[in-house]
Image (cartoon, rainbow, N blue to C red; front, side, top):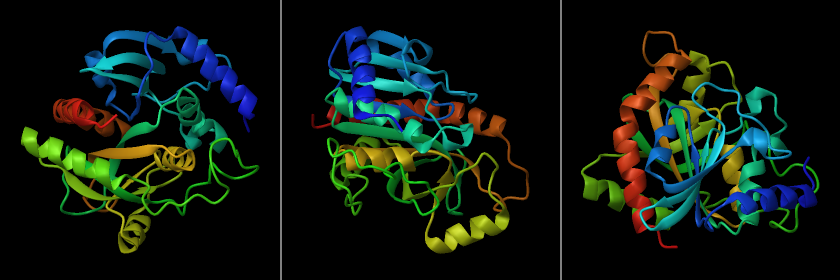
Length: 274
């Protein structure tokens, strides 16, 4: 567990390296890191150079903070996130979100690569996250509450901002890019789910499954941040198709979807009300 004082130290270190005051934070999922190429006048900070910051160990997660502008909006992007399955304590998984809040950021865009449970989905689809199922996620709020961030029992009835979801729908419609919408469910990983688990998650109302995002969103909402979420459906979940799953397929499909993903993100950030 990081102390509030340690989080402040990390935030101050990062702030000292930035060339602007970011208003929107972006967490980039597996294979979706190319968006940082559209960040202008950027400053990059390697995770390894930030005292006390975890390191990203997964293929497709480079391990850098990139700060600059997309359009006229100052942003900071995580090119690589932290996962519970990497062996990190859940408090380490959400460290960046809390640091972003201490940098004065109130708006968060979370993205991920996910497996499609909804049989109407296809690999390469983009999904607006309407809600999530966190029953299988160890809570990042476990332990002593950080009163400086928020209340002991935060409301999660609108984990993903209805206003921002509407903005994302408008942005994608203007671009002529069809986006799915659905419920994302967290699985601890690193193994893929069994067909029986996928059938059970389908009954619970899940449309897509992945190994990230939910802890970060819980921490963000605890801190009063506004959240928008996008999943890139990189494969169909276990048992939906008669074929094995592998991480290389996730990376390849994410790269194929990057053009639409980048266009939508740039458009919605341009429209973002900050």
